[in-house]
Image 1 (cartoon, rainbow, N blue to C red):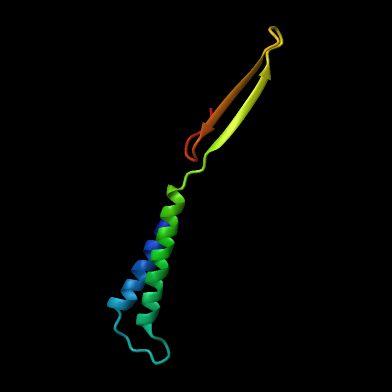
Image 2: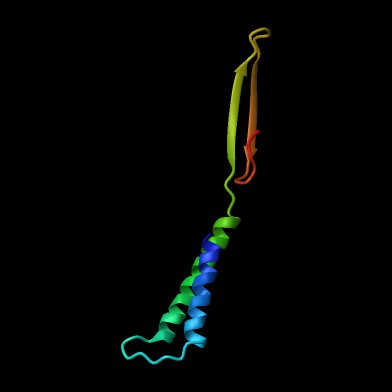
Length: 85
C-alpha cells in the first residue's frame, strides 16, 4: 500500500511541477510539487524496504510419548510469507 501511495504522491507532484502553469500569489505550486515528489520518493523507498525485509519466526513444540517415555522436540521456522504447518 505504501508503494502505491508513494507513486501517487510522486505523480501528483510531477503534475504540479510540469503541467500546471497557474500563478498564485501566496502559494508556489512548483515548490509544493517538488515537496510532494520528494515525499513520494521517500514513501516508495520505505515501502520497498519494508517489503524486502523478512522476519523469521520459530516455533518449538515439545511433547512426551507416554508409552515409551521419550520426549520429542520439533522446531519449525518460517519467513514472513510462509505459513507454519
